[in-house]
Every structure is written in structure tokens, then in C-alpha cells.
Amino acid sequence: MPLNPVVVWFLAGLLLILSEFMIPGVILVFFGVGAWLAALGAWLGVTPGLGAQLILFAVTSVLLLVFLRRRFREGFLGKVSEQGLAVDNIDGEVGGVVIVLEDMQPGGKGRVEYKGAAWQALCEAPLHKGDRAVITAHEGITLIIKPQ
Image 1 (cartoon, one colour):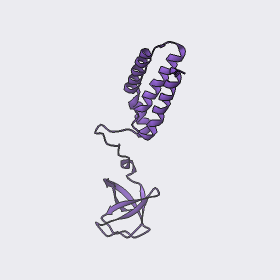
Image 2 (cartoon, one colour):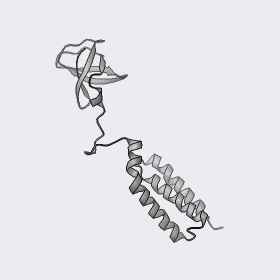
Image 3 (cartoon, helix red, strand yellow):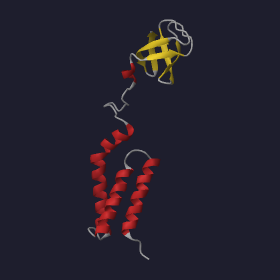
Image 4 (tube, helix red, strand yellow):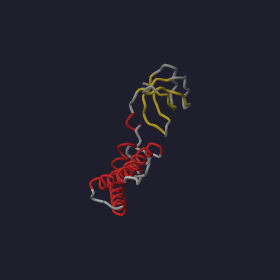
């Protein structure tokens, strides 16, 4: 019994789309959609031969990849700056209030809580556990704080 090309293309597309979950990169999904378009073309009779189906698959996959990948990638993975680094989200937190988790000596590092997460912090003034402080800047993932 010969294999139905519509079923083969559909299953190949499904496999490619599901593979995107295991190998993220927002690439395989476009080849999966291209395979589904090849299945649709075979089902409608527009591409009756394997050669025409392969051309439809290749052309649609590449076009989808070129024109839609950036838009989908930003939606799934977040925006990326021109330097290729993740956009720094902590800059918007300057002025936020933290709670000191451990005593801190002037110029020393300690831990603070901000939005339910523990952060490393640096302060030029002494702070005690339970004190509140304000974020003034950051150095990497270390918050620079001052007493409130």
C-alpha cells in the first residue's frame, strides 16, 4: 500500500513543529508550516508530483523563515538590543524599595529582597536586617542601594 503524500507531509510538519519545543530557536516551526502547506497543496491537487511538493515546501519554508522569524522570536524570547544582549530590565527599577535581609557594613555587600527575590546589594551606609532601602543603580546583578 503506497503512502499518501498528504499524510506524510502532515506528519512531517507535525514532527517539525513539536521538535521546536525540544530544540528552541524559532526555526523548525517554519519548516513544519511549510510541510503543512505542501500537504495542503497535495490535498488540493495543486502539486500532484513529489518535485512540485518539494519546491512548495522549500519556498514557503524559507519565505516564512525570512519574513516572520524576527517577529516570532521577539514574541517568544523577548527583544534583543543591537549588541545582541538582553535588554536590561533592572534600569527601570531605580527608585524601587528593598528590604535588607542581613546586616550590612558601609561599603560591604549584603542581601536584600526585591519583588520577592533575594539580590546581592552594596551600600555605603550601615544597614540592619529589616531596614528599608532604595535602589540607586546596579552593577551587573548587584544592586546599589541607599537608606530610605
